[in-house]
Length: 436
Ligand code: SF4
Image (spheres, helix red, strand yellow):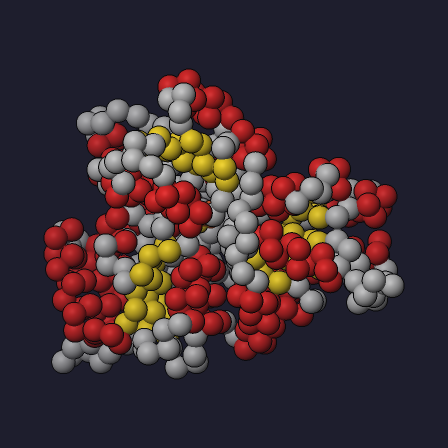
């Protein structure tokens, strides 16, 4: 199976059929980030850069000019020297050129659990995006350093909700619902905040301070059930699609799920709509999963009548409704593992994971619903050049003492309440996937 890196290069050079959603991705990140001073947390290629974003700075020339083979040898040598002192975590959506160095590969929930369960590692090199590294910092000891090899590896969805907008929304909801700490005769408060794991640490802290919780795509239904035991409504951010798909599968009518647009008064709703709301959905989305469509599913079914269509719940509701099943990346992997040989799967999630599954399970026919090669451009910013740079700094040399670069630290005023919301999440066992 051709890696996504190789495929993109082939397409842009005319050597492979198909399209790529951004030809910029053929370049190394330090080339396509030219003109941008380096940024994070968050941002896909063309998003607004958060003003308070930490700066990546330029990667030293020796790493930018090194060949693929040289970087490979340098990473292996540094990893061998560091041994168990360093743990490398890799998200499912990372390209193969990065995942090959990971000691453990998983989705954001699994990586958070692995970070927490690895107190022996002095440093965790997180090959994911900014909010995941923040979560690892929250769950590890103060002595452990969590390193994000490229600070510009963010998440555009996470950037769609920021603490000021959420605080403002909370105040406006209080003007409609009254005292948000007041319990009714059933012991429930008017609204519970729920943030998706794909959010900045200060939003997790907001949830911790206001009786709320974090969810992942594996446990969203369990978390919503937890929230409804404690509140009459939920404010769900930042991903409208995960919130809508999960709540719909629980039987909540769509008219009780108004969207909150942070740029408009009352989120663009009237008071009566908010009064009858059960889930208020933040107007955020994943630019990768938004690309999947019902037309793609229909085409897959025409071509392969026996195809099983499985999509991620970050996809829009009509896509989830039209699919055979929907669930987290872990759910998708397990569905393929459990299938009898000769099965056909059309998958609606990020292309790197789909291609890897196709290579690992040659007994099945596995393809991506979207024929356009469109990897997560923010994940794509983790490149072997940055990994070699971060690892060799940790190793140090006779001329240069060992150094921790790109350490992700969450300040204690945010970390304390964020841990409360995360611990509630970790206690909520992943339940049934969103079913269709
Ligand atoms: S796939 Fe979507 S949600 Fe995941 S990191 Fe990329 S932009 Fe964010």
